[in-house]
Length: 489
Image (cartoon, rainbow, N blue to C red; front, side, top):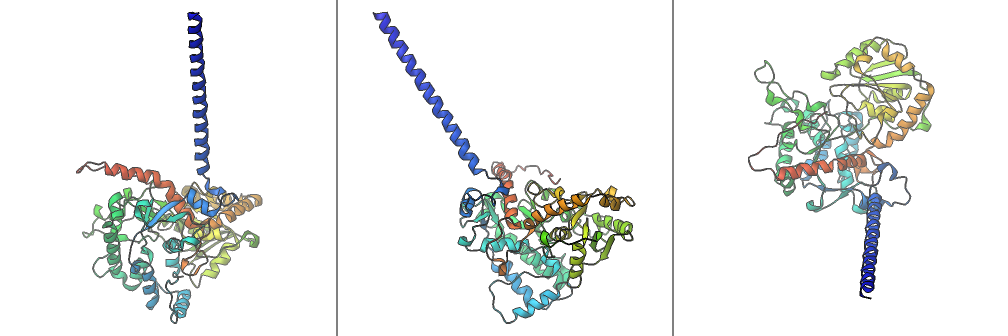
């Protein structure tokens, strides 16, 4: 009987072990299934956010957002600059009919936050105003904001530096242009220096070397004197063109000093974000679109520098072509209505490179439902990966555009159906490039699908690489420098 009992005991033990193993396998498989199910529910595709009735806006902020700490700067470096702007008499650079009217209306008012200038030279770079306006909106009203403001820097993903760099620079150029490249007597430089000194002393900067700080540098001359010092930070720029230019001439007069060059390693698609200009012309809705009798329209300066030299060549090729209108000028107070009429009555709007690869003209064309014709081989566009520009724009190589008769023939080859499809896609994309939120002073809820949210979503995509760079820097032994690599393509 012993062998039988032994066999029975062995069999029972084996059966029990098998059962335990199967149970463990089942529980492990179930755990993996639940892990991936829950994990996938937190990975939300951005375009579906506004279309899903099951996700409340408050839940959106909790599930997928970027935590932003606002650096502590005195009011004199942001909203206080607007007080200063509206307080002095304008000159030919800072003056505009719209600004003169605003300045007159403000003389009898006391407002905590003044409006951003309507002068086209400044308004096209107004992103800094709308981003800070969103972050300054009371928490209970920020239900549509992708950025979640936090007040403890230890909780933050990034640190936003609220300096109105465009207003600072343009006021200096308007009041005393002759000292803009100098440091002595330059109020803009003094403000730049104050910003950098305050930020670099902060605990936030010291913990990351500035790599998680966000600066708005849309104006090509913004923070011109201190760019090398803030190069590690996340820079919000309209393109990279202004960073490759020679920023000053060598004192010798015969050649360029390497110390005067902004190095390419200071800007990178890995860390920096291309953002839209603020459009200057009003939005035309698809339902308002009318017949377009002109084939191709352009309004702007004929003569440009550097990469913009192609514009002058295109002008000479196109100016006398039937169905093409080439106008010299800028959409200021006198030319704005002319620009609105020209863009809204044309099938295509020419967008050649200027002093830099992009211009505000592209976003005016989009708001006017005028199909952009982009002639700029080195262009970088806002929100690529979120927006497919090929669905509503025509991209042309410079070499093709400069062939006699080629461009006009190419544009005439597009069928009515193709152009209508371009225009429908453009109408869908229009809100993405909108900054204004309809609230005086920019303080108030923002459109969920607007430019400010898309900027923060794009910064959010950069976080893994930025955090990796911070960790790599922390483990660097004293006295050892990590080689700088160019990622500027």
